[in-house]
Image (cartoon, rainbow, N blue to C red):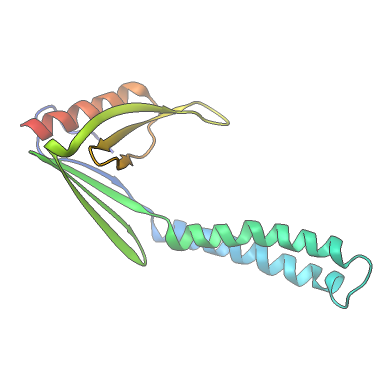
Length: 160
């Protein structure tokens, strides 16, 4: 994504979730569930002394596979459009679309926030907070300067 030159309107920020990414998560989830069930079901049924052990492993595999499938099916893609006086945020997945129009006077804060990473470098997001308490975050950025520049562009577009 490139940030438009200063003063240009509108500012657009898209965070897509391509169909191939969705398909990959669904396929991985189905594979984890399918292969573990196929290979370990004989250890669970017919019931025997080792059934609880194999059942515990199967439950662990399903607890990884089901969230992967759900991520592929329901992960949100987002699109931000900042124009004079408004920020329009559209969030969509294959089953639902959510649209938010936030007027300039409804914005409590538009700030850069650091997100702590468990591994690797921390990332930064531009966080929009409304007077009603709602909060929206952009995608993660690798540098604070980039996030601050985007925030500045958003503020310029809102006020221009």
